[in-house]
Image 1 (tube, rainbow, N blue to C red):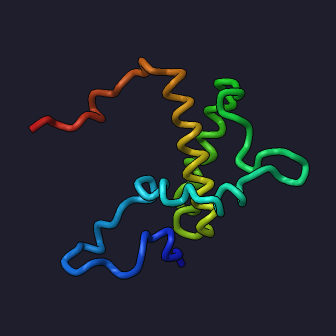
Image 2 (image 1 turned 90 degrees about the horizontal axis):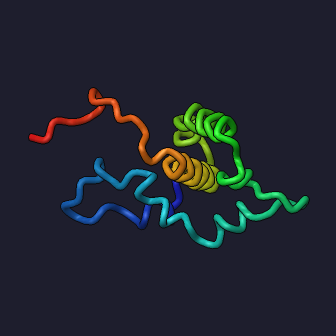
Length: 117
């Protein structure tokens, strides 16, 4: 069950469409609280629970990490605790941001583009 802090409050306001709530990615800023940082902080051995800094990963390791996160995405979204989902979203954003920084001119598949009109 998602907590009220993750949902962004109580019941939907009158006239709002509860079926069109913000996506987890849009709500990630709400999860940037101290409770998430405390849960994701250094482990007892001093390592970061969220993994190696993406900038320190080789290209192969970066792709491997992205594959792993995307493979576990639905299960994490549906069944993980709120802090685990927040960590998953943050790690995914960090890794994808690093990928885009390394590949700014990545090839865009024209079949993936939407019509403009």
